[in-house]
Structure formats: C-alpha cells, structure tokens
Amino acid sequence: MPTAPAAFLRFLALLIFAALPVAVQAQSCDGALPPPGPDGRVAGHFPYGDAPPQDIVPAPAGFGLKPYCRVHRAMLGDLQRLLDAAKADPSVGGTLRGLSCHREVARQRNIFCRDRGVSAAERAISVAPAGHSEHATGYAIDFAVRPAHGCPDAEACMAASPAARWLIANARRFGFEMSFPAGNKQRVKWEPWHWRWVGTSPSEPGAAQARAIFAKARAQFPAEPGIRDPLKVVVTSQPPVPVVAVAAPPVPAKKGRRR
Image 1 (cartoon, helix red, strand yellow):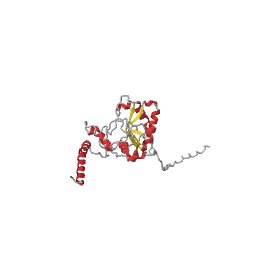
Image 2: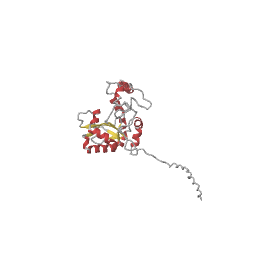
Image 3: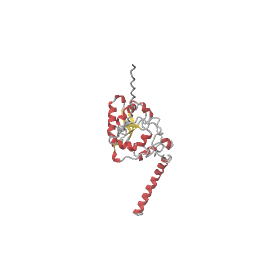
Image 4: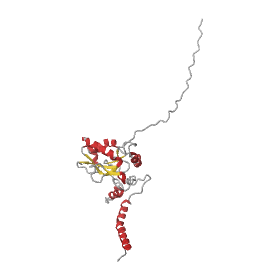
C-alpha cells in the first residue's frame, strides 16, 4: 500500500498531466499572434489588465442579458442615467441591454480561442486577444437592443436601429464614447455596439483613472463619437504692449507779408 507522501505525489502528477493539454492548447491559440508593437498593441489591440475585484460591481438591475453583467463602480451612476434617459425617450424604439460587460482576462482567452476555424490574426479583427480587451477594465460595455427586430447581437446592422442612433447622438452626455468607429485605423472591426466610459469631464469622480487607462488609445485612435474636452487658454501674464514713438509733424514756417 503506498505511503501518504507517495500517494500525494502521484495525485500531484495526475493534476499536472491533466492540465498540460489545456496549457498547450491555450499557448497554441495565442501563440500565432505577432509580438507586441512599440506601443504595446497586439494585432491592433492595446494591453489592458484586470480591474481590481473590489472596483467591479453589479450593473443596474435588469440591464444585463446575462445575470453576471458587472461594471466598474466609477461608471455606475452615468450608466444608470443613460439608461433612464433612453427609457424616457420614445425615439429609442426599444430597450438598451448589456450584451457584454466586464470580462476577466481568463474569460477573454476562452472567447478568443473559441473559434478555431480562422487564424488568430483574423479573429483579432473582431475579438481582442486575452490581456488586450477594454472589457477587462470594467469601463466597456457591448450594448444590445430588445426587441432586436431581426438584427443579431454584435453586428453592424445595429447601427441602423433607432437605439443605436440615439446612442450616437446622446452617449457623450453620459461619459461614453465609441471605441472602434467605422474606418478606424486601429485595424479593429467597426463596433457600433461597443462603448467605453471616460466620464463627461476629467474632474468627474473616477474619470481621471479611466482616461489614464485609455490615454494611448484615445490619443492615437480617437473615438467617434468621442468626448472632446473644451480647449482652455490660460494667460499667466500680459505681454508688454510696444510703444512706437511718433515724431511730431514739422511746423510750416510763416511767410512774410508783402508790402
């Protein structure tokens, strides 16, 4: 009968052996991608790490299409105000719902590796590789519309819906901007359903942190519609006004009277 240490070592070996195919599979899935560029992008996507767990909270009740829809706590108030405004506007023509909210890096890997029928580079056009998704930050949301009126979720046909037109016209009022507009040079698929929160102004609570995370993306590939802060001109001192001396005109000489 094997001793306790020997049984434990055998159990540990079985665990490692069982996990080995999964590790190799994940590596082969992500390994076909090009190395990061000078700005850290992989296949067009910037790197983003997982948000601190204590910052991720449940989305407003009834918003998520799935029960585990969670978002960053800093954007919760603006998201609720956006949903309230959309609900009160009959032109929306439906209800905005959360198709995808916060996604951990591990879950993003499963999503990216799900479709093995195409190359990793082709997949990266529409799905970010693990560690390079805005969803990991908790600030990004993929919106859906219910009823969908025949348009599948996460498809370009959403842009023609009244709800999408309402988002394009109004989302900026609540601190949201479209990360991947049509014709973007980031080599990412046009995603009219994907919006990230950066706050309505840098002074809004939590907005500075969100803007710092997305700083490179916003600078190199501006969102459209995007949030543009008004230009501030600060004058620290008034430059001296040059004084040009003007010579007095010559006084004409008086002519003597003829006699």
